[in-house]
Image (cartoon, rainbow, N blue to C red; front, top):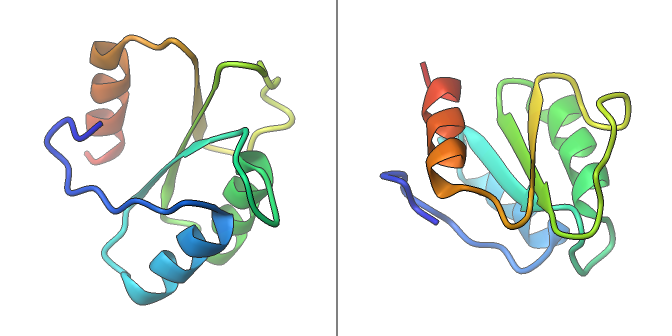
Length: 96
């Protein structure tokens, strides 16, 4: 999913953290909640919110529907299958 954005892909949360450490230009984290590695997408999103507060967060899942109190502040959630138009619109709104 690109929607006009430059996309960097990480296989797991550990790689995502490494990318954030080496690419300060990253402004949005788009992650699945159900992912392999040392932490799931929700834990990753909370870690990113604490360490890189300006990074916008988008979480998706085909298996979970987290409540807003579980998600980090100022994050968006989309259930799979999601509408690409809605996701693209939300991503662009986050950049303005």
